[in-house]
Image (cartoon, rainbow, N blue to C red):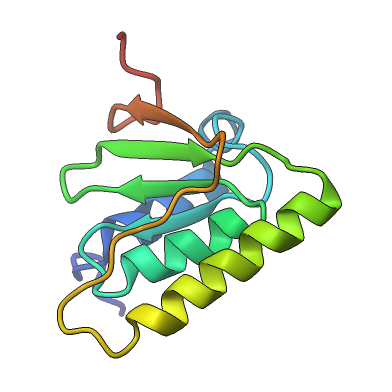
Length: 121
């Protein structure tokens, strides 16, 4: 018998819930990466996905989330932006402390509730 009360991070819980709930899954763009805000590597994981052109959902412990959708740049511009992000990560690698998430130009951010629905502005 498996223990269903085990602790899983909020991002994993959201992915698992969307597998069984097509209505929930339809609230997210294709190729969305779900990242828990409590993950020690959340800024690097989110930055990497965004500069690859994929949307990211940052999931907070209480279930609230931020959906970040990158603007799809033209191919050459996207390569230059990705190269700049890589260079920035390499330069920061030797620094102490955490790194801040980098957003590509034109990224859109939408605050959502724990059901994945947009919050009124």
